[in-house]
Figure 1: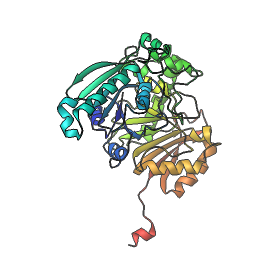
Figure 2: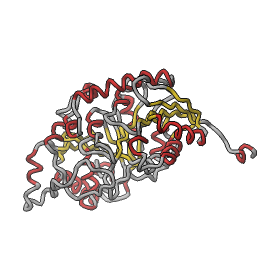
Figure 3: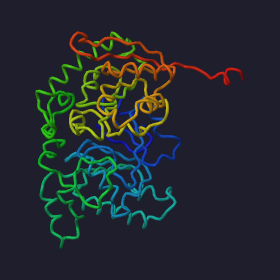
Figure 4: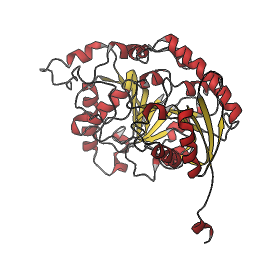
Length: 404
């Protein structure tokens, strides 16, 4: 699992090698980077590093990569690098390509002086060292640092007389809080549970997909048994979905958004299909996103009372399971459905799984949006009062457009 800062070319290459990437556009002034990446079939979201944390839990990514992404990494006390440090697993890698790496050979093409670039590279190395990164390798235009997982480096931060290190965050700061959470100028030392989720401790891919991670214990009712039960449930559901929507598993659907996931069960059940899944965890619900990442999947925090951070017409299939039952008191149904219409491609599909109580209202709104929908039974129709609504966003034009 790799976090990529840039236009996603590297992420596309890794995706072909079986490595799931999540590309971010930290400065979206390059002709709509996110939309371009999603059109290529590569996972991507807008993720501007500014004053707020990125919407991911701590210790989530195995690698973070930046290729000429134009972020002033050493400015403002290195606060943007502190965010990279937060989202990387202990033992994870930070890969930088472009200025000031290899300044000795490249400085003439960068419209600057070799002295300025040397100073910038030394400052970068100093800031990374102060965050407990260790230089791992450097070759040509690429430099790699590794986030240390041992305690010695972080313990040195407690010594205020040692100016080599940045201050360590106090224990009152929640490391996984990432929804409208301000960036803080301090280093989050890996907790004992985070160390158990370090790059060298978690199982390799694909074994990690079905192994209950240590952080599942932080969730009320979370256990290896609950994960196994959830996986079994979603395997049955996906088999049923494929009978209702045969396009699942074909090249007609390249990306899926699971709008209200728990452990990423839908994504796990689709892992052998040619599709990737964006797992969305409610910012107001149980914080299960660390488990999603520890399984080797990708996801993001979000509040569906707000717009999702993507361009229009970027997803092939949207899946919604019990979202209105869980959050109808906060989020008005029609606005959530209109947001779904915005991010769904023309001829894209929607699977809505909800109680009978909401189905009539949902069907009325989807008809007004000119979706073609049909109501279906669940895989256990006789055991619950849920229904499944299978929809397709139709192509249509207003009368004014058609008369031109």
